[in-house]
Amino acid sequence: MREAVSARETWPFECLHCLRVWEEEYVVHRTRDEQGVDLVMWTRDEVVVQPPWSGMTCPGCGCGTVTSFPTGYLAHHPETTPSRPAVEAPARETPARGAPLASHTLLALALLLLTGAGLYERLCGPAGL
Image 1 (spheres, rainbow, N blue to C red):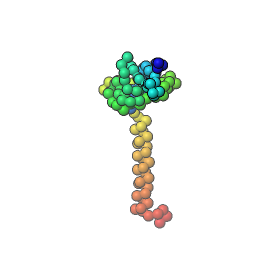
Image 2: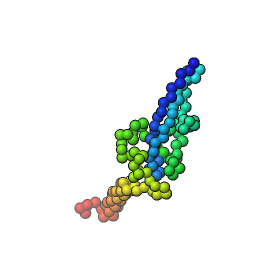
Image 3: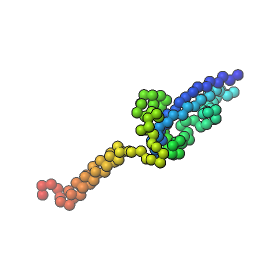
Image 4: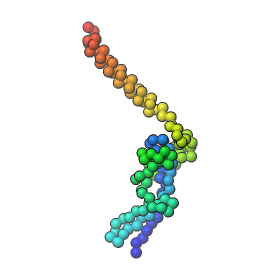
């Protein structure tokens, strides 16, 4: 006789396109076959589904670029909890992403200054002449 163990697991996800954060609850059934090979079956709402790390799509925008957090991550990071409306972007609205734009702008300015300094040195010769 094979012994089966079932457990509920809640997996947190974030869409890398619209930045929506949500959780999905799974029931994980673990057992062994006759040869002793471990078998794992993931279900959601009593329907067999792929594991959480495979094939997840965003329920908001439908994008397949989704990442998951470690189990229990959202409980320790209240700024990313699904209940906060600021984290979840409304439909057909792109979230504000000022920080990445600012860092890219600073990087571009630094590269422009370095390039300009190199060109100035080539055109005008070494300092002191």
